[in-house]
Image (cartoon, rainbow, N blue to C red):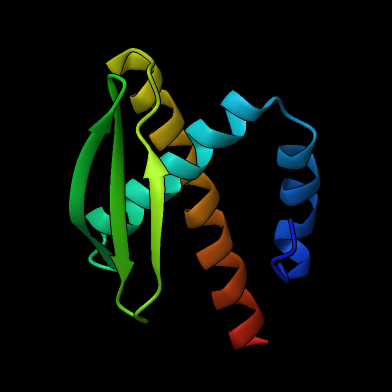
Length: 101
């Protein structure tokens, strides 16, 4: 990944980079859906190619990207979202701790 992660997320970035592509795609999808859920992004388009669903997402900062909806069970999607939510919660707590210091 070329994104400049804060030190608290650097380990996660390395761990995610070491995972198979389908695991990375699932996690990226989960993060994108959390951004939509939190009002930080919106789904602007959906299209299907060869029975695969692609979502076009636009962030509040104006960035636009496309993401594949993973072909996994709803339970697996929920588990991934829960994990992503916990990681974001920990990141926010870390930011708050740093700001208070």
